[in-house]
Image 1 (cartoon, rainbow, N blue to C red):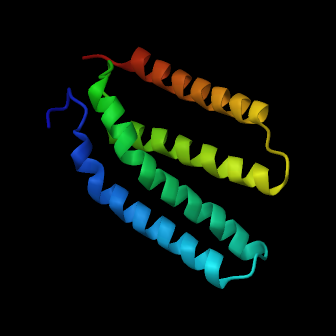
Image 2 (tube, helix red, strand yellow):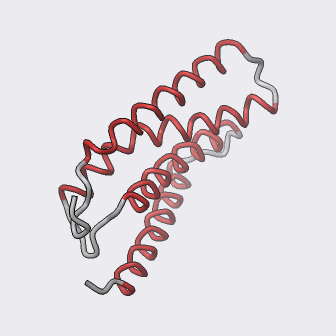
Length: 130
């Protein structure tokens, strides 16, 4: 891999597999064998973030590989983008648990997260010198 290119999506498969296995495995065990008290509820959100990060990692890596940008996207940026997906999904689950979830709120949250990522990428682009 040259430093001027985004790494191929296949380089992220082992990490994605590990995150999916740990995240979904722990979620299944948590839902089946623990009462819904405060501690296991926070573990639920933590393991949901792990599981969604593992699911989103290959997709985000492929999209960044397929549609290259300037400056090239590195592994920290791909991980940050997958964490945005996971935090979004976990936040929606949390809002649904509190009976506050609505489609409008989900769209507003999505637009906010996209705006933050856009501004971070814009900052990286202005500091880039080939």
